[in-house]
Image 1 (cartoon, rainbow, N blue to C red):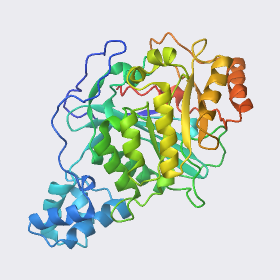
Image 2: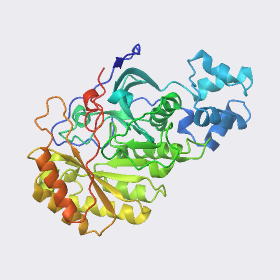
Image 3: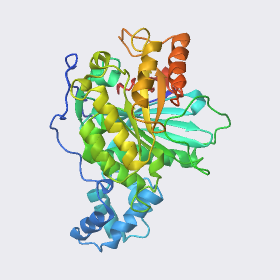
Image 4: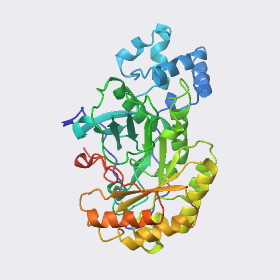
Length: 407
């Protein structure tokens, strides 16, 4: 099923496709999104409200509406001001104008898996497009969010990487993807069936049905290349309501291709989110081709950083491994990966092989079931916990590596 909303008048900025193997570590300079409540800490919100001539506690009242009640707040929505019944009538619209601008506008929605998977294409304030995916399970709901418009990591099997990098998202643009999904979950009918395979993110705690329980930074972009905004979003997600959404850090997964300094920086933040390392090859020769960041930080350096993350946080690291037919799915590579992980100890890591999701124009395809099983068995024989991950949203180009934000 596909539904489309009227498009915003701004044209979509499109970068030039990157040269093979070329990295773009710094996003192009573009105009910044307008300041939003979700960009600020509670103290900063109260200060911002005071600067507008209002009493500081109005900042907390707005936070209750936004983060706790999940109210539909938008400066351009005439119903938003009327909903703020605990604020003076003369203050409502000025506060909305100053702190609650519309940041993301839905332009396309695609649904599959009997309504359990929903991909939304969002148009940002400057016309850039990003995508998020809501994946519902009977006892949990996971939102896959974008942290950049496009990606500068240039992995050749990933549609996002092949599109190039337009710009970084702000903290509030990331948070809005989650909050919108949370609003949807409040009214969504419960699912009555189970889904096979390992879901994205950690297992949800009891009582999580009907709400967003997990957030994975596995949408468009390399989140650790947009570090400040990504960490700001994590803090807004995990801060207790009404400072934030009050989610458990255990339900948040930060994915990276292996920016070693940023992994160490994340380990020092004191937020025990799960680290997911997109490895895709255990040897430098192949990984240099599949994951160009490997030309800066080699497999050994990257795995060492992942182990340090486990030591600092106690959170088991996930190794993401897209299985590509006749490229990286050899049984001996599974054995090599097991040996590399075991060099760094036991019990600190879990491997998630993922059958490669098809992308337009790609010369590669998913491994055969026989090769997949041989690869998985090689890891398990080395004692490495391994689970083939559930693939959701292939038919709507909403699975890992397929997000290209097209309308």
